[in-house]
Image (cartoon, rainbow, N blue to C red):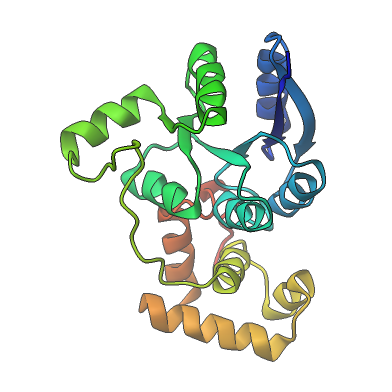
Length: 225
């Protein structure tokens, strides 16, 4: 029997280890690698081409949303299941728009996590039961026939999203430029475009937006002067 290969992308070691131990109890799963940040997840996914990626939505350096887009651009056959401690509609919508085929709360039972991996490997979608029930009740017309959410336009480019995340993580323009391998003036231009598109004109506002959209977790937020 060919086992389902899984890449675990989660920055909290204790959570990642918990998922690994849980999945190792199943005969049909093989954990091929673990990633501690979004950039590492992209590199490992490109190299190993796993069947399924369990992706934390709020990852350092490159969030799970952008990491998912980059992974799927390189290999559209990969199935990404987004993980989060939050079930807000905006989080679920953003995950779906990024290309994820499922959304799991970190409190989801081991049975449902394993079921989700098997379902998405077959080409289906899977959402934690509490999310599915809420979406059916509140947004009955927002699901397509395959259980995915109707797509909405994403206002920011992939690079702008990367810049936004690093700004929200408290990185200065010079640090952001070094991290992304681009010039400081390019960073400043991306920052200006982000502010214009979102109609947000200060760092504190950008950070609040990043938290509300699931780009970073509130625990990442630094004190802003």
